Image 1 (cartoon, each protein chain N blue to C red):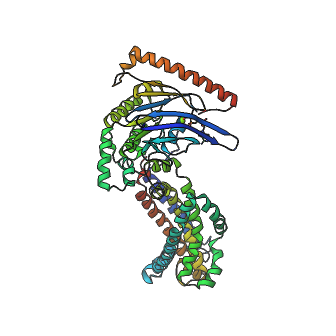
Image 2: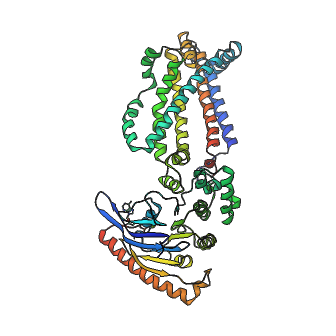
Image 3: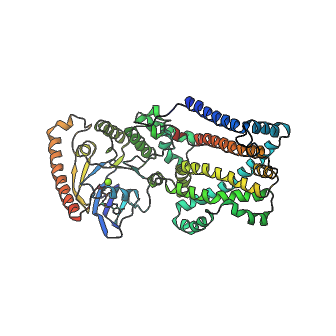
Length: 258
Length: 269
Ligand SMILES: Nc1ncnc2c1ncn2[C@@H]1O[C@H](COP(=O)(O)OP(=O)(O)O)[C@@H](O)[C@H]1O
Ligand SMILES: [Mg+2]
């Protein structure tokens, strides 16, 4: 017997209902002053604020764009460097043994801990943000790619060699496509990490971006603006996740069909 | 005397594990002519797969050699195409692209290789599934694709390691006939491992009975039954006598193999 699964429509309706109830309670609690509006503004006020920030001065859109660019560039850089290193490590035990310790030392470091050094080296301009994202993502991408490569069925590699593939061809036509599903699901996790990196970096030293916006709002005790910033982060990550699912469907047509 | 097409020249294969050295195959000597279909039968664990792996160049001989047209096999040999029991199809490629894989590696254009692949796909009646992925196929269909993939690569020798073992009895019989018709059309040389004496009798020109580990050639039997060998042949006296005599030999080896494993206190596959 399987677990009961709702169809998409009922699930969406229930989900929307849940959010509405949540917002309604929140509105009620703040409007009746059970929760002080100074600490938590009602949702209607947050929406009003978001509207002002987008339509009237447009600053929110600039912030989203700035943060998104930093995430994207830093993330792509770590993908470009990390995936080839991970592939090579997955295929060659000697290289793996050599690089593994370095990766293991870098990986546990939170992105925040790179901020002092990166600021000393790069100041607070864009490159420093890319560097933070890169350091936060790179090691994880290497580890995910190495694991994905190691999980490819060796029988397939053997079959390919038997069909006349060279070692390089096996890498390109068997190991890479075979590891792709696991690499992509790893990248999805890392992309969320990339956002936390950028937000942290922007809170400490920046003059634009969602992290910066939240931090300055705090200085002015502007809770509405803090909440607008937080919701924007959440929505962008959700949006990217959906985008990522489309990319997966496109790159892995063989996986969606069961 | 002319050189044999394929020659296992006193092949010995040993595996060294941490505990001990196991000789899986010992002084295995066999000559195979071009276009011949040879079956290897024997107890489980007697070294059949190891012999095939040596022919494909996946494993290198401890002593002795495997010669293909007089040339020693020293590395993975694409001229000996392997059909794996577990199919080993690439799940991310369609049937068509799986069959065309070897041709792609050779650098044929997309159009050329698909044209070539299509021929084999039609030959085994999978035309409607040319654009399907392996996960959408049944076991029998997957094995047909695997055979096509090896054939499309223009192999000199087709190596089949119990290719039909995972199939149900009926699919299996159909597949045997299909393999035979393909093989006869293309004069393909085949080395075929099977657990089933019936399968060996239906398919082979020659049946090689292997002894229990370490595997060597115990007997070679030329199967002179008329072709095509359909269900009717299986009812003739010749067939039944032959089956009986092969079974007696295999049974002896299976028993001694069982004793061997009991003494060693380990299970077999
Ligand atoms: N890689 C290996 N390492 C150690 N022993 C092996 C290895 N491959 C096979 N063997 C041993 O060699 C013997 C023959 O194996 P195999 O050729 O697979 O037998 P078969 O295919 O006839 O069942 C078995 O006893 C098996 O345990
Ligand atoms: Mg075997």
